[in-house]
Length: 211
Length: 211
DNA sequence: ACGGAGGGTGAGCAAGCGCTTAGCGTTCTC
DNA sequence: GAGAACGCTAAGCGCTTGCTCACCCTCCGT
Image 1 (cartoon, helix red, strand yellow):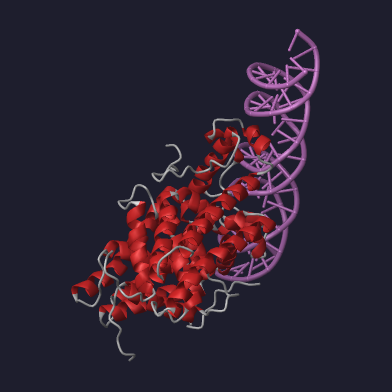
Image 2 (image 1 turned 180 degrees about the vertical axis):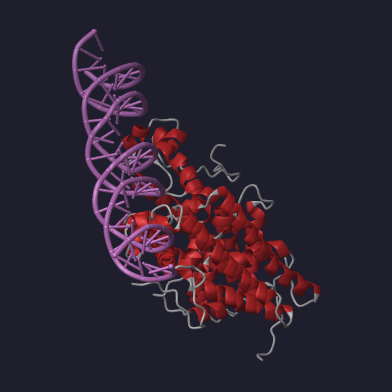
């Protein structure tokens, strides 16, 4: 019943967190927060999952909220990186939108425990940490909006309401973290492919021949 | 700063909850749960918002969890009713899907505090209450899936993956409760119209002339 | 051999939690 | 107008919470 956070793509999550004990605590916190929610999770629960005593937590983190902040920060950095790479990538607007949705959804499904914490526990952050995270989210929004605007300008997309559609696309992707379960029949890749297709239809992209 | 739960359509929420004190407590609980989350809300906070002492809560409700269950049950009943009316309504599949998404999203936006609790605090329910609610959700899923299947059978829609698209449509609508704010520039009606259009595109409905 | 630094523990504190109980004022019944 | 019923409160019980503190290992350079 360990953390299901390992991926096939060689991406090793939380490798930036050191020392080892601090990372074990953080991974335990991700699991607990995702399962029960931040407020319903106790520091004893986190320490217990990491195989340590309750006091050990406070050697590596000042408060329980700092743990959430670290998780949220790292997760949002990763999410923004995924979207930015796709938005700045090669290809026409449709190809970039496909890549953005596909990879963003893939991450939300493959790392749904992390994503759940990142996307749904924002309100538990302290005000100053919250606003830091909100700034990152605005940049994610801008990345998607840029792809849509490019597609409209190039005549590839038919989107009457670019800000509204941007919101809907991101919302659709983010909510994957809520319902996705490894017990379900779909793989993260399949969901990514399905969602990329749905989003291309939403923006009225002309169907292209398969490469 | 009262509850923003009144609507223009004459629908009076929580009218089924009596006596008056029980309803005031329930409305206070909805506001508090939506704002802070179930686990971060104290019984003292709920009672305080209703203008009563902490003990007053336990005259009308056995536990704090019963309060959440009542809210969740009433909300899910309403959500299912909205979808069922649209699914069983007149018109072709595209018209019914338009009506379903439009009214479902309208409700999530107009009653976003209630919807937030209903959609995102499910895990805080006791197991037996949770499974009762999950059963209601499966019926909502079936209602949307029926519209999609009808549309595909009639040749109106182009949907390669009906269960997956059903999931995506419901997910898109539900997530409105997370991001919608009365402080934003969009009205619930506008969001409903935007989303109905986006969903019709997702299912590949042939554009029809405006009636 | 030994002092010190860093990572860890057991015990426990103050505060806040959900919930209970004894009792009070008002209203209704006959 | 006595008595029950109801709606509510003040006080507080037992427990859990986030967090702290005194102390103890193990490793390591000199």
